[in-house]
Length: 78
Image (cartoon, rainbow, N blue to C red; front, top):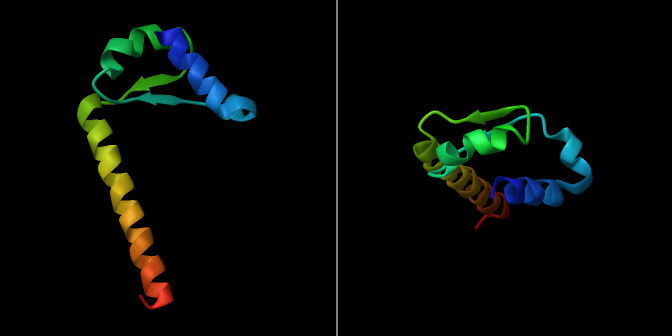
């Protein structure tokens, strides 16, 4: 499974893959996969309280998106 994750990440990033300097693992499976993925990339960091870190990341993304929509509506006078 770890190799499949690695392959998908590298495939998605294609020519930009060499720019990946650090991977952060979050989510419920992060802890289970950390040891396996650690051998596939030299700089993997398991987030502290990985499952909550994933949820907080989505919350931050939603806030950023909401703020952008607010600013866009404000700029158009909506």
